[in-house]
Image 1 (tube, one colour):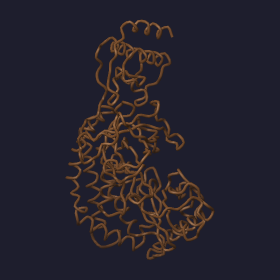
Image 2 (tube, one colour):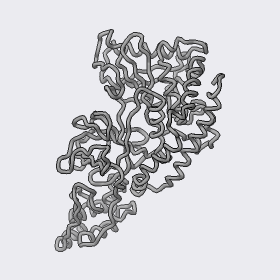
Image 3 (tube, one colour):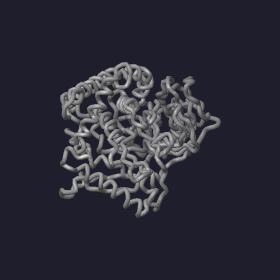
Length: 495
């Protein structure tokens, strides 16, 4: 306390305010979010040093005035110099080549939870930075409102650059997307292949013709006056006219004609009402063998709803487990068209989490309606085998070499003759059209160039890496997998 008091009394005589507009970035050393470097910041720094506050790359970043990833007396000395008039090095900033989304949480609270009850209210505005194809929304003087919290599992707990879920107070057409309130801000911190995994996975989904693929646009984000890097503003999968377009179903619905449809499910999410089914029902109980379906679009199930969807999924599972490769009974429950397209995208991306997590399915209303697959989501585990086992590991279907998770259903469905034939036909058409005009290498090159300055700015804020090396590595992996798939599906015969 003596240190703090001495600093305060000394600097009181020589205070000089290091100012920055509140519509931009906070100056380095502005600990208390008042857009000045002053005595209050010195006091907070002294408290942090005396309490041995641990450095955190996001939430204590402003305390690290020296930028050495520690909080110590050197930070206090630099802040003192700033108050006395010395110039500090600038904080990392956005590239200015992409739209910038500004978010200020209420009371400048840190976002430390991903639980539903821990949403924080915030002001926000979007500056299109001269990109006229996108509309600027709000302003520093007239901000809009939203709720924000963390999201994700592995990406939330294992990376300093955090993913977020946002709910706008009102619907807006953010970055040219359809009007909605629900979006995600995803940094793809686990994507060490030039941020191409979700970008290419989503683009392949669109071009192969799945009914809905989430839109995403790159933006740079400033949170509480601090640049936090390159993010991908992404539509959150949910029921809606321009998203998963199925009938709405009310909580605790009991009408037999209504509960047949309007089902939106996710495998292994554990965020909503759950339906549990043992996949291989004729084997001893094993948790890894459980099919855990999260009902995404209904908060509370009636007994009738739970009984209906449980029986439907059980019947589908029993049919899928049939050992008769010529069986078509499973097609009474599974939509073959969306299954095949969804599966092919996962194989091209060598996504080891495909059919084990982040797997969405939906069912329209009607006794004869089938379970459809989509939208695609989260390609963060794409091409994770190759760096470990070598490029030759891409000469397998993804479900043949699971490394950390257990793919469900796909291995069993792949044995059916109709599935194999449908995959070959869809592949040959898609491959023969150059992936519906995608021109893969050119698409990759153009996309990486469009975000190169933002990736470099992001690297200055978080970590350094070789963008061109990552891009070329991604190309090597995806071409190796595509070439092998062509040997499997490019001619007639069994898979």
